[in-house]
Structure formats: structure tokens, C-alpha cells
Length: 222
Image (tube, rainbow, N blue to C red; front, side, top):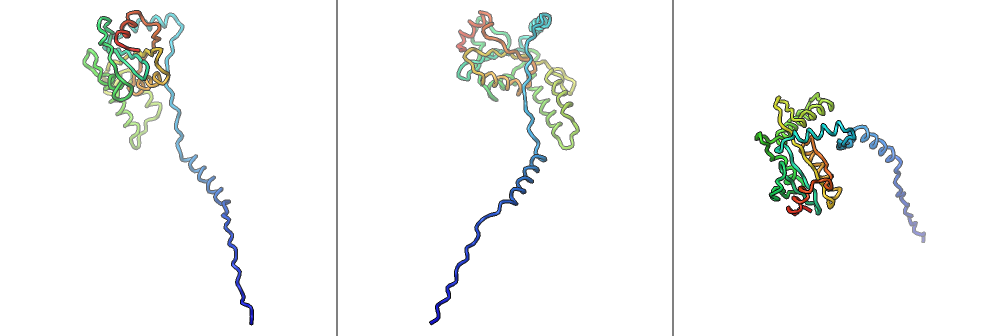
């Protein structure tokens, strides 16, 4: 009787050749590098005080010229708390120091709704003008360059609207207490950028007058 011829199964080669994938990945990387717009680093410019006595004297004179209704003072405290005074503080009434918060419903809202003695909301007007400027810059077919945009934005922050109207600008005094954190300071500066505040002063709380210290102490600022 003849032996049954048993067929042997052939082993399949399961290896995957990834060599062509290397070339494909290099092509994809090159494609994205050429087509992707890299994000530009954003930095906030701070104007530091000068040692020149003549310049400092001019700054002191400008502080006296600034109207009370054009000024808001922020006190940065512990536990992410913040207070503000609209205009000049009333040292006899600690209720002029009012609590607020960071963000859209806090400092931004206070600045946006602040009305000067002329009956103008300068921050709201400048913010609306900036929104229109951004729309003009981003519209299809716009030929506005970055230099032109920055130049017009600079004028807006100084209160010069495209319509020719001149609005007063706000001055914000930021006073971080010793209990405030670095993050609180950065958050306050972000609010200045969001609200297009061109003039703001970072004041050392240790150099405040005794009247100011007594006022915030009675108001519960800590």
C-alpha cells in the first residue's frame, strides 16, 4: 500500500517592510514644515522708570494732571483676591475700596463699564474700535501690513479713533500686596492687555502713604 503523500504547509513571511514609510514620513514632515505658520512669541512691553530726575519730574507733573475719573487703582491680595478704587480714594470712607475678581466678569468688567466725568466709557470705545480694526485686518483680500496694524493700534490706545474722535485714556495703578503671588501680577497685566490700557503703573505697596495703608486695612484688604 502506497504511503499517503502529506503536504507540508509553507511558512508565511510576516515581516513588514517599513523602509518606504521612512521616506513617506520625511515627505510629510517637510510638507508640514513648509505649510505650517509658526506661532510668533508674544511679549508684553513694560516701561521701566528712569533714573533721570528731569524725566521723573515730568512724570510727577503728569500724575497731577491726570483726572480722578480717569484713574483706577487695583490692590492684589492673597488667595487670588483683588480690590479696586475708582478715582481718588476717600480716606474717610473705606467702602470706596470694592472687591472684584480676575477675568471677564471682574477687572475687565470694571474697566469696560467705568465712566469718566465727561460721560464717556473710554475702554469700551477703544475696545470696539480695536474689534473693527481686527476685522479689517483679517478680512479677505486685506492689504494691511503688520506695521500698519500696529501703528493704528498704537493710536487707538492713545485715544485717537479712526473717526477722528479723541477719547480720554485710563490710567491704572497696580499695587500688589506682599501676600499676592507672581501669577496674580501676570493676571493683572493680562487684563491691561485685554482692555487696551496704554498707561498703567506698578506701584510698590511698601511706599504707600500711611493714609492709604490705613484705608486698605479698614477695608479688609490683605
